[in-house]
Image (cartoon, rainbow, N blue to C red):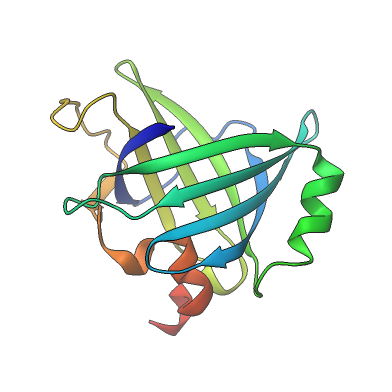
Length: 157
């Protein structure tokens, strides 16, 4: 099983918008030790589904075990019907900066106005340069986890 290492930031804007992907995301199971997530990902060219199982984060909030596998888009849509409501809806943009891929999520519905940027690293102490659109780091702050945004949406803060 792969260990995911990522840092999470608030973004102040979306740089150089490219074609984004609409993501509809829900959780089949969430508790303090793991989550089971379903995603339906689409744009005008691509439609795919994903199931992801994530373990608990380490003390830094940067690292946790993750297992992800592709499923059909139609299966993902059916599984989303079994998920706790509301679903997370967001558009994801990719941005390359100095050899690193940044994923910027623009949230919709009850989380509208929230922009979160993430970078995946190969190891915890790996260094990188922040792009101009980064406002502040929120790695490990649970209220910014997608699973928490379902229970406590951004608009209610």
